Length: 174
Ligand SMILES: NC(=O)N[C@H]1NC(=O)NC1=O
Image (cartoon, rainbow, N blue to C red; front, side, top):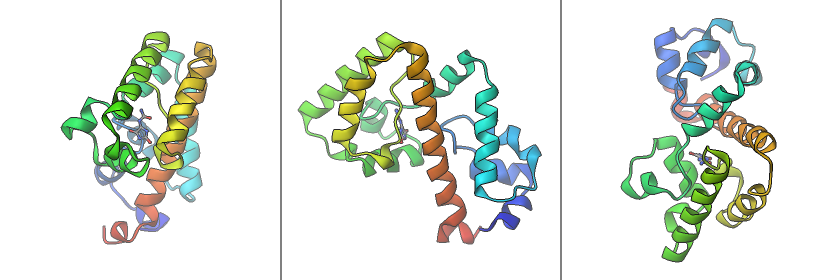
């Protein structure tokens, strides 16, 4: 699907296809649809980024809270979105040893206790080892720095989801 095809979509179809580029936050693609015609993927990304940046800190934290834990209960019960499932698989979280699951669960709990939102990182750009190391390291951040860091990761996840929708062969058939 090229950018002209994206620009020709009705908002219903746009939302159907791009509704989860920010995990469980369809309001974001719904809001930026008004900026068509987009000049390219980078333009869509920039509008999403501007929208997120314009939110109050509580809104940014709300976006973070829409993300499932890595190696959490939703992965175990098969309740993840398809995007998140594929991302967690790519990072190796579908093949964890029981001890690794316990370690991730306890680090995720500690993180949530400290910051009030879940630990978010772009799983496709990291291995499970990198992720556990980052989680430990980021636990030492202050809340504002950590919120900004996590929102940066949300934007990376979005960029990769957008690329796979617009550039993949299966999307060409839409
Ligand atoms: N918690 C968290 O980082 N979740 C995610 N990361 C990612 O790449 N996909 C997700 O769902």
